[in-house]
Length: 176
Image 1 (cartoon, rainbow, N blue to C red):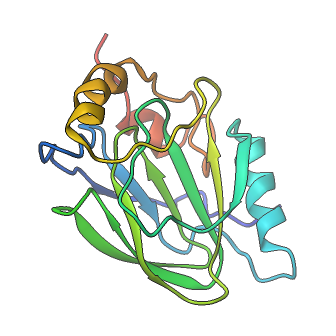
Image 2: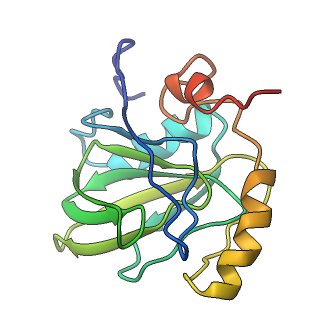
C-alpha cells in the first residue's frame, strides 16, 4: 500500500462559473506528492488506494486535450507517470503542473483540459459510487442542463486519498 502522510493537506481552489463552464462552489483539491509511486506498478498502487477509499469506478489514460467537465459525478485524477500542464476551471481557470504522485480531485462541473504532457504521462481516474461519468463539452445547452444536475451530485463519503476522515469530507460538506 502506498505511503500517504497522515498530515497531508490539499491545496484548495474555487473556480467561478464563467457562463459556459459551471465549475462548482466546492473547492477543487490538489495533493502534491501525495502518493509514493516509486515502483514498477504505480497505476496499481493508485488503484489500490482509490479502491480502498471507495472510489472504484476507475480508468487508465491521460487527460483529454479539449475543454470538458462532468456534470453528474465528481472525479479524482492520480498521476502515475510523467507530468503535464493542465488547465482546471475552464478558460478563465488556472494552469497547474501535475506530476507523478500528485492527485487532483474535481467536484462535478470543474472544467479541465490537458495543454501539454510528457510522452509517459499516465493517469488513473476514478469516481465515487453513484451516477456514471459523462464527458460534457462547454456549450450553452450543456451549461443550462449542468446547472440543474451539478447541485444534485452528492458529496462523496470518503476522500479518495485520505479516506473517511480526509480533508475532502469536511471541505465538501453541504449545509443541511
